[in-house]
Image (cartoon, rainbow, N blue to C red; front, side):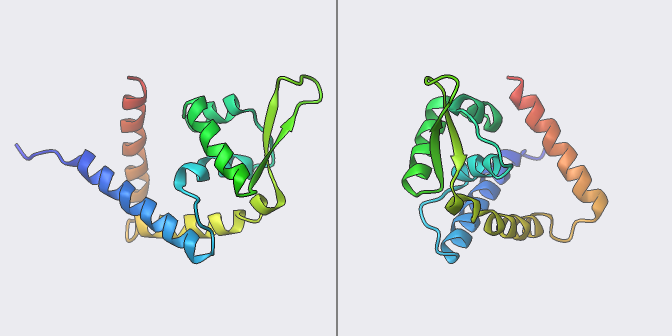
Length: 143
C-alpha cells in the first residue's frame, strides 16, 4: 500500500501559500500582516463591524487569538475599536480608511494565488478538488 502523504502536502502547500502572501504584501509596502490578519480583514471588507466573539466565530479562531490579531491591526491603523451606543460593555471592530484601502491589494493577491493553486486544472478538476477538500475539512471539523 502506498504511503499516504496528503497531510504533508497540505502542510507544504500552506507554508508556500503563506510565504507567497507575505512576499506579495511586502511587495506592496505592507509589512507585519500575515494570513491570520487577512481572515479578519476579509470579514471586515464586507462593510460591517463585528465584536471579537463574532469575528472569532466567523473565522473559526478562539477569542483570545482574535484579540491578539486585532490589537496588531489596531497598531498598524487598519482597524479601530468602537464602543456600542446601546451597551458600553460591547466593543465593535471596524475597518479604518487605511484598512479599506487594502481590499484591492488583497483581491489581486488572492487572484494570483488562486491562479497558482488551480494552475492548469480543468473546470471539472477544480470543482472535484474543491469538493474533496470540503469533505476532508468537514470530517476534521466534526472532531
